[in-house]
Length: 339
Image (cartoon, rainbow, N blue to C red; front, side, top):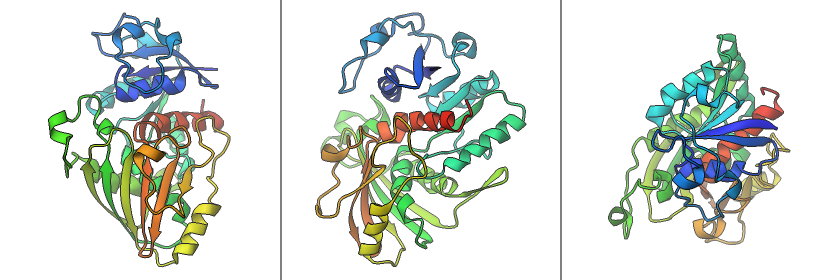
């Protein structure tokens, strides 16, 4: 078992990390860290558990620690659910102290030597860990993408066999993506908010890095364009998106590509049986309320494939799109013997 900790353990994504790690077969969750107002207190006393699953009582008496490498020196890997402005400095300190960091924050995603990984899409990008180590760092940082980017690139993975140069996407994103207090109730009820700060830029840039090619010590960006329009809608969990790709193949060939798709990895505990689930005979699917927990929240669902090419993709934003993505990355890191 590998000893792990969670940075920002009391927040929305931090609680998802605790949920996924409490009984993990490879990772031993020993350490929880949060802000100074929580440090020194039992986790069960300071967390306001907001998830639909029962609170993991085995974690209740674990005392929360400060977010410093010295306070977490007994762990080999930490999962970061920190806000981006805090994560930038803190994650560097952990990596410099010899601790591996799997981060959900956006701070380091676009750094040239930091892998931005979705295991079903670009597992080979973990090779950038060697570049970090060659530069003298004892630990390393691996990031997962923005929640909406994860849904889209996972849905695009089976289509890489076809030629395309242009992707357009319109998202309908759940309110949980903004955290517990991210959207005021009176702002989102009976409403659609047609703007999410920096979200469109993240989708447009992160996708090119993820679907790019590792050449030596650098990533060459994918040779296509992405245009995104992102919107917040009154759904609790589950990001839905309409995607347009300039693929000229028939709907039948595209559906076959999804049905034949086999991810380049297998055997990871958090990996679902289906990374991508295709709806072929139900024109009103996928839907967040019905499909977000498919594959324990780790499956991306695709439907309404139409000529053009047009389709709908949907996935659970705080599981597949956040904590679950980081845990899956960590499992891949272990399998590839970087830990």
